[in-house]
Image 1 (spheres, rainbow, N blue to C red):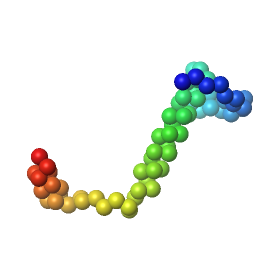
Image 2 (image 1 turned 45 degrees about the horizontal axis):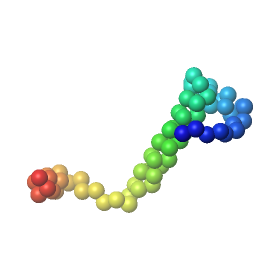
Image 3 (image 1 turned 180 degrees about the vertical axis):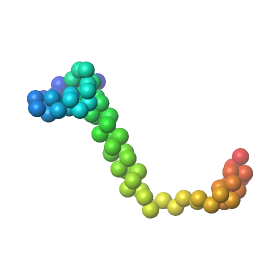
Image 4 (image 1 turned 135 degrees about the vertical axis):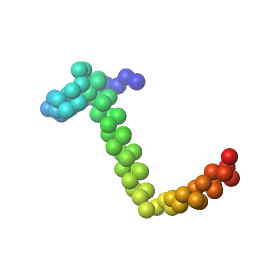
Length: 68
């Protein structure tokens, strides 16, 4: 996808330095992917304690035999 955006010079310099991007496009793409990955991890962490996981080995094995 092509997009025209305005990025402050100092922000772009920092981005290029931290991402070691060879081009501006590579640096911006890296930053976007990294930001999305961070947000996904935060989503997963927010579920901590909200999902009941059966971690009893016997129960898990019994469930496996029923399914397959």
